[in-house]
Structures are given as structure tokens and as C-alpha cells.
Amino acid sequence: MSNLSRRGLAALTVAFAMAAVVTTSVPTHAQQKPVIKVSSLTLPVFNPLVWNIMKARGFDTKNGFELDAKPYPSISAFYAAFATGETDVLIGGPTILQKLYQEGVPVRIIGTGFTLADLVIFTKNDKIKSLADLKGKQLAVDMGGSQFQVTKMYTAAKGLDLGRDIIVVNANFAVARAQLEADRVDAALVIEPLASIILKQNPDWKVIFNGAEGWKEITGQEGWEIVTAMRADAIAKYPDAPKMLIAALQDVAQFLKSDTAEADKIANETLKLPPGILTAALESNRLQMVIQPAWNPVIRKSITDMMERAVKAGFYEKMPDEKIIYSP
Image (cartoon, rainbow, N blue to C red; front, side, top):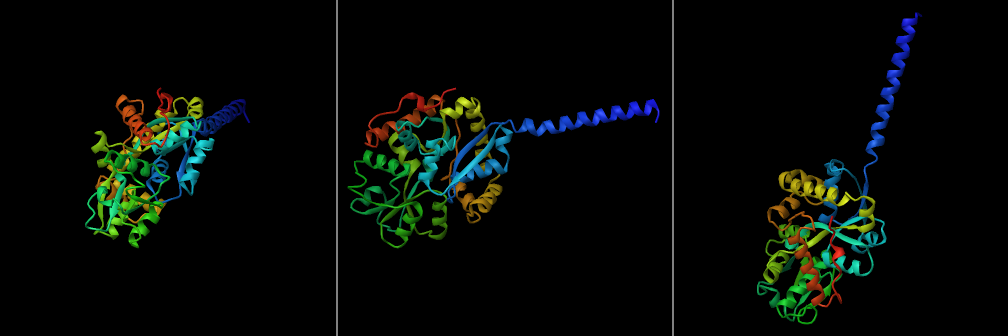
């Protein structure tokens, strides 16, 4: 072999080696994206759908991080994972996060989530037109959820004591629906997607309370059913994580509006929701995903107001300090 051929072969070998280095370095660089662990649920509710859509559409990697959704079979386990640091993020009730913060969990509310519009109370009795008509009657509601707290704050503003004037039967959303179906209670509190499923199967059932409408009646604002929170230690580790996560959640919210049919398909495939249920929830305006930074002064005030009312209602002794709401 000539010297020229040897030199050509050597050059070619070096070129291949350099290409191999470049090729193998790409995935290594991609793996350097921060991994954000989030609490999810195995229940057929819209909480896990947010993460399912984010992962399926690549909104996490688009915004600079890798989503790691950890599924939990119950709401208590869902919150506990965040409280212990097993997960970094959850979207949950603002007044429940208020409780965790006062118990020493490093909660930082970074953004909004869903409005109270998907909180509804159903009845089968045509004579019951409002919550006031439930006086002396039974309401099935999950007393461990933020929805119960919101409803109790509303009834208190109306001069009613939920638990004394209105008899409360503790039941999760599915059981509450079953209790109403069996005529064991006079009304039941549920959230989406169960609300849309109920209306499809029982069009004669009446909605006597909508969370957003009720909250606006007593505060002038629609309020938040769930907000987005991140642990302070996760923010310290990844300072840009709050803004990246908010951007990805905004992509999910936009996708629900612009690609509803595809979102409905993802809901059917991942949550086993009947086809059309997500579409119905969105078109009815009961399901309203609104993502805004919590440090926006107007948003901060709306979240703080919910917490102040929780204190006035007797759920908590005092307000959390201002650190509970993240500020960049």
C-alpha cells in the first residue's frame, strides 16, 4: 500500500473516530436535562391527564427538562410523596398545600392550575334549587379534599354551617355519586370527569352549585381548585425549574383547547375515559386549565384570599408566611 493510501486510510480512521465521539456525546448532553419528579394519580381524574399529555407531546423536553410522573393510588399517598420529598411537584388544592406548609413541608406555589368550575353538586330532587335548600338534608362529599373546604367556606358566607345545618356524609367522588343514585343522600359533590359522565348518563340530574360561580359570588373571583407547587429544595437544585414547568403546563393548556380531539384520545387511552368525556368537560367550560405564574400580583392575591378564608372558616389557626408563594 502506498504512503498516500496509508495516509488516506489514517485520515479516514480519525474522521470516523471523531464522528463517533460527536454521535455518542449527543445523548449524554440530552441526559443532562433536569429530571422533575411529579405526583400523579392512578384514578380517572384530570390530574394525571396533565402529565400524560405533557409526556406524550414532549412538552417537557421542549421546555428543557425530563418529566418523571410517579403514580399513586390514593390522594393521601399522592400528597404524602410530595411531603416526604419522594416527588418534587404536584398540582393540588391550595388550602391543602397551606396545611402541608404549616406542617413543615417546604411548599412553594409556583403557578395556577384549574379553576373551581369543575366542582359541582348534583341532586335528583327538583325541589332542591340551591345549597340553601339542602338545610336539614344530606350531602355526600369527600371531607378530606379541598373541595369540601371550598364548599364549607361558601356556605359559611351564606350563613349556613356545613356539617350542622347540612348533614355531611363522607364519601369520595365515586361513592358520593353511588349514594345519590341509590337515594341514600339528597345531593353529591363531584368533580370532572365524573361530572360529565354523570350528565351523559343521567341528563335529568340537576347541578345546584358550581364552585367557580359560587366563589365568584362571595369573592368576585373564580378561585382555584388546584394550583401548581414545587418543593423549595427542588427549586434550589434547579433554579429554572419553576419557569420551565409553567411553560410546559401552558403548552398542555393550549393543547387542550387547540387539539381537543387528540387530547380526548389520550384521555381514553391512558385514563380509560369514555370517548367524548374530555371534550364535553372542555366544551361545557367546567374544565378550565389556566396556567399563570403565582408571583403575578393578581394571582398571588387570589390564592392568598383562599387561604385567608380557610383560616376564617376555622380550618387553620393562622396564615402561612409569604414564602409559600414562590417569587423568582
